[in-house]
Each structure stands twice: as structure tokens, then as C-alpha cells.
Length: 168
Image (cartoon, rainbow, N blue to C red; front, side, top):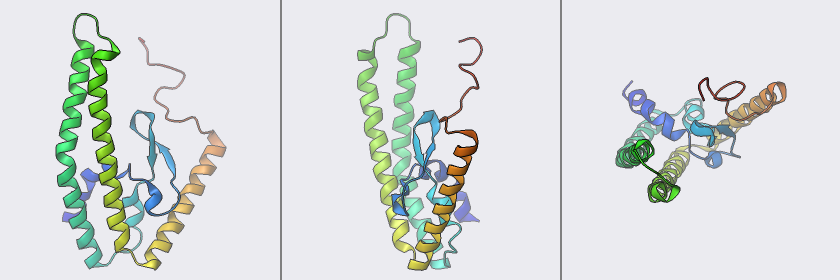
């Protein structure tokens, strides 16, 4: 139960882990419309980890979470600064926001590198049989996504049907 408690806050962050750790990446629409790879943890839960593997995954995830927390706080602070600038009186130009965007991009890059490192550490724990099962699951989920796209089309993230929300 403690493992689940730790993993839940990380699922959002782990969702951005490139699926390169298991097979070809499956791109889904992430928050803000950016690409997001299929969540590694969704597949890992299905490969029947041993108790020892679960313990090691728990340790890896705990360490990753501890490293990500300060970066996530910095990211939140920068996003607040951007919002404050955009909502401030007077003229605001892209040059006013650009330094903050650069900082935001650097933090995103650090988080992506950390998430890939975490994914590779977890992948290294898996047996060949578990990797094979994970690859099979990934392939099936990818096929399902392609079938969904064929049925309803791949229109990217749907934020508002038919355009912007009322009042814009």
C-alpha cells in the first residue's frame, strides 16, 4: 500500500517518460497539447514484479521524487512569475517573458532527463521475460490507439469542441 501511495503523485511526472525504455514511443496528447509517451508505470504494474523488484522500484521512485520536488517548485514559481507579468498593468512584450521561458525550458529539460534516467533504472530491474511482456503490452496499447485514431481520427488534444470557450 505504501508503494502505491508514493507512486500516485509520480504518475503524472512518469507519464512523460519516453517509452524508448521499453519499445517504440507511443505519442499521446499531454497537458498543453505536447507529446506524452505512454506511462511506463501502467505497463510495469502488469509485468508481475517480484517483491525485491517492487522494493527497488519504490527506492528508485522515492529518490526520483525527492530530486524532482525542488525542480517542480522552481517550475511553479516561474509559471507564477509569467502569469504575474502577463496580468500586470502596462505593456508586456515577449522580451519581458523570454528569460522566464528560457528558465522554464531548462527546468523541463532537467525533469525530462531525470525521468528518462528513472525509466532506465527501472527497466534495468526487469527480466527478459518481463521486458517481453512489457513490449507486448506496449504493442497492444499502441494498436488500440491506432484503432481509435482510425475510428474517430487523430485530432490532437481536444480542449473545446468547435473552438475556444464561450467569451473568447
